[in-house]
Length: 167
Image (tube, rainbow, N blue to C red; front, side, top):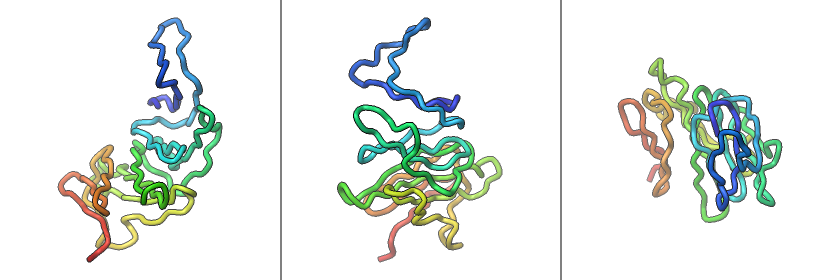
């Protein structure tokens, strides 16, 4: 993806290199209309993208190409500059897409951790503003959530916030 809002699908086995006069070997281009500053996540034949100031979107990958339209998208908008989603799961099922809204980084507002159901992004499972004790530290631009050992780790400007079930 690029700052111009274009998402490109390439053949990993035949990238072809760059030719200033073309043709570039791009299999598909999708115009998301919002800049892509993070890295999409891939899980179970679905690509999850959170562009700048846009909803988190899921695009199906089938037959070697991406669908023209998202299969689902969140109701929540992820502020600028977007996010790099992370997927956690219990093997091949129970997927959760985690994103961090870092749009408050310039004003020292808290980062907002959000969790969505991979099967339907309209279903927001959690966000860190639901309970006062879950609010994260000041947002660090382009922070990426890390999932390990049943916990979600979020680096902020001045702390490491750890989310998980209480013992």
